[in-house]
Structure formats: structure tokens, C-alpha cells
Length: 120
Image (cartoon, rainbow, N blue to C red; front, top):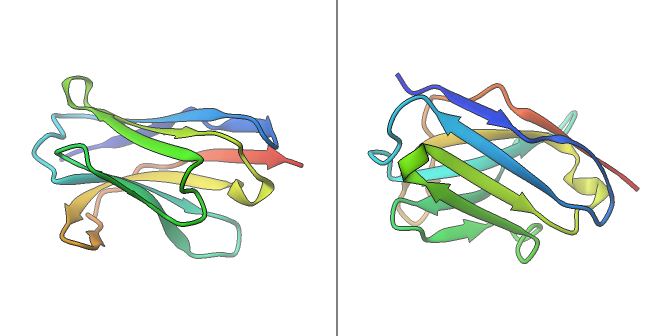
């Protein structure tokens, strides 16, 4: 069973940057794709970015050009680099291991999330 642990969230001013990390309990290379989601209070959980095992990435339109997803298979870690943060980026951010086939198919395992709060 893969366990996912997110970290790196915090309080930051608008225009600032954060780097989120997602550590897996075992080798994640066997998973096709890793993803970051986010959920703001009272809203659904939305897909933010994905990275395939080959390193190809895809982003939600609202974060394209500001966020970068990357993976370090040797260290079982996936990152989300967030720049030029906006108040609307405030949410709990979750990591997921799933599959990519033109669309992202989330797996059943989720971490507990890490809170990102952007003050305007």
C-alpha cells in the first residue's frame, strides 16, 4: 500500500512562491502518473497538475505558467513549484497516484493534504 504525505504548505503573500512536496512510502515509479489536486472551502476537489512517468506534464488553465510539477523517482517524491501566487490559489493541496490516458484517472490513495493560504 502506497502512502502519500504532503508537506510545504503555509501562509504567503500574493506574488510569493512555495514548493510543495509529496513523499511516497514506496517506489512510485510503477505508477504511470502523479498528480496534485486542490480543494478550497465549500468547493470540489480540482485537478491542478499531472506528471507522467516519462516526465510529461499537464496543467489546469488557472495555474499554467505559474506552477511547475516535477518528480524525483529516485527519492520517491513529487513536487509542485508555485510562483506568483494569488488569493484564489488558497486551498488544501493533495497528492494522488493514478493513470494518464489523455485524461487523468485518479487512484484511490490520497494524502492528508497541506494547507496553502495566500494573503492579498
